[in-house]
Image (cartoon, rainbow, N blue to C red; front, side, top):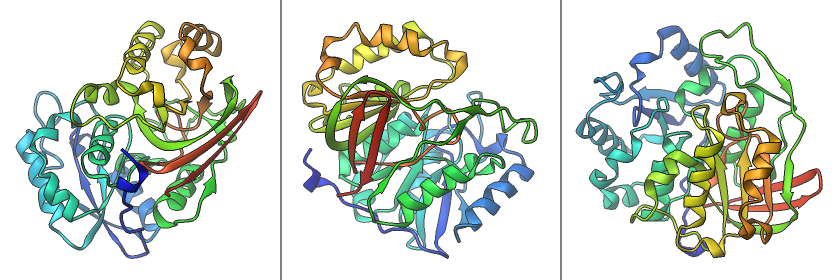
Length: 331
């Protein structure tokens, strides 16, 4: 896919309406006080919030039937007042809806899609099928964070409200605690900065996200073209070194990987057991990673706070020992 294929949805402005859709987990699991915090943080950006009809539907997998999710998506696409579609929470089932999406309807009614984790499947598939630039960033529930939230809000604002290129500053702190269970007793760690595995310079289309979810697209019509891309890869706390190694191998075997320009890896949570030393050991197994810049410990994914990036937008990475400069632009 060439960059000429990509098109950018209209930027947000104060007063715009967001629609929350439960593409994965049901919003039934988010308490009313938590939602009030989410709404208040979105209101700081001037965003009004509405909800899909089926956001609280929940089955034995804590999600709703595919038909219900598709109904919410298609009705939202036809609502001209809605400018932003936010995933409610994460989960593991967003990829289930892909064969039921009306792609023509989506192409004719482009809106901003934003979410992370499980949403890696949907935001990458949308870009692959339509060329629409989507956004890998906070879902609705993430806006319920109180402490350590400003970095995330600033990045969301830069990416979704403005068109100017910007440099991604690494957050000075990071956390992997269950903040949604305890907002007061948070544990923050000093950010030691990026881990540069392979030095170099590259510019390319940003694609990827949560690797486990992204992998559901491998070998399908929904998988984006890897040509001239910068792969953004991150994982949640369920992954372990061996399973990450296996997923990484699968990624490297995908058609077109030889045309990838760089790989950027989000910071791992401590629960994964993937330390810098273990990660380097894994990466050394793959000689193809010595030909492109590879940088880890970046502030996106399942540690907090996180930056937002445009899937299908352009990134520029300059990596040297101990330093990495990442610029994001959409054309």
